[in-house]
Length: 52
Image (cartoon, rainbow, N blue to C red; front, side):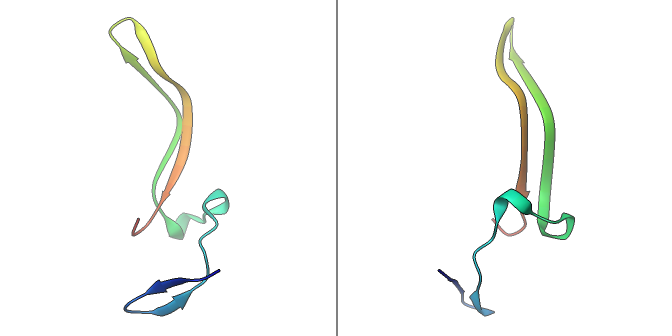
């Protein structure tokens, strides 16, 4: 399966589970979020690819 990019042509699919630092726009590790006294998010980790 391939993605089409109007400026670059055909690109192989991005493996979001194994992004390199160069492919990562935002990296989050161990995020905990509280809304008043309730925990809304618990230990969230993710990488968001550039251009997405």
